[in-house]
Figure 1 (spheres, helix red, strand yellow):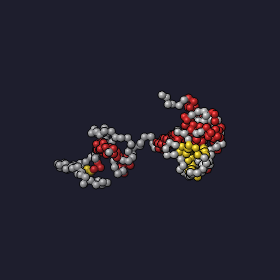
Figure 2 (spheres, rainbow, N blue to C red; figure 1 turned 45 degrees about the horizontal axis):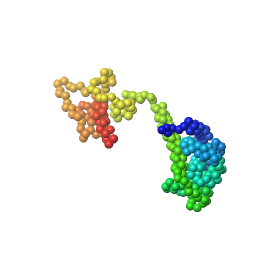
Figure 3 (cartoon, helix red, strand yellow; figure 1 turned 60 degrees about the vertical axis):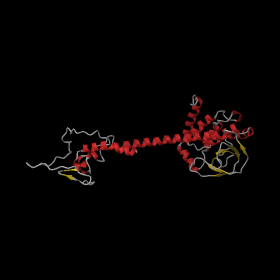
Figure 4 (cartoon, helix red, strand yellow; figure 1 turned 180 degrees about the vertical axis):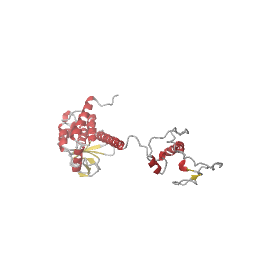
Length: 328
């Protein structure tokens, strides 16, 4: 079974995506949101294209398509975050066309498709575009839904400034229960819009992360520079453990000395011993004798004079244990 869109549905999606990208850029969305109003020019253009009646039968002035085509439009409207009342209007028109009485269809659908009537949907506690709407589809906690004409609605402010919300009181105009499936149609359209919003948010997040990483890489040198010998001597530790060291992970420890005597700087040579004297006793420093940040002498050498391979070896041994603790 093929769940992909048909060629006609893909064409609808492409046209909607291109049109909304040109007619509803972020600047216009922000302008409409700050003004607390819909983009009336874009709304009139979408009405002329017949988008509010895309899932309404041709008998009632619609385009005679289905819920899939309406969901495609809702997804693109969510992706563009367009400041138009098309999603509530289209969802209400499709629900009335499929689940309302014949009398309600003939009386409400032509004006809804033409943009002359306004529609809203939601619950009594929070309904989209219910304030000033001519007809609202109210959902209950279960699967039931009813059609309310000229409801008593009070505006309700939310964090979404691109859409108008309201609470619907118990009174108002006439109420008509809708057939089974009405609530599912409203939820499908709303889910499609949220899908478009999430897709746009994901793309914006990825773009931000990629741009930030690119800017960070361009600001830093492509290859880490080795610290100078003078800076290394002033540092509190050896060049290999310096914070300015290259970020590449050191290789496995080795006991083979460096071929270049100039680069083999550790361990430091012991002072010359007088002839006929025995070598001094050398003992490894203990935890109690080694104080952090201080030079602890062990005979004629110090803790800081240990070869860097000691740190490499200890790091190679201790890293698996630390990683296990982190995972635990």
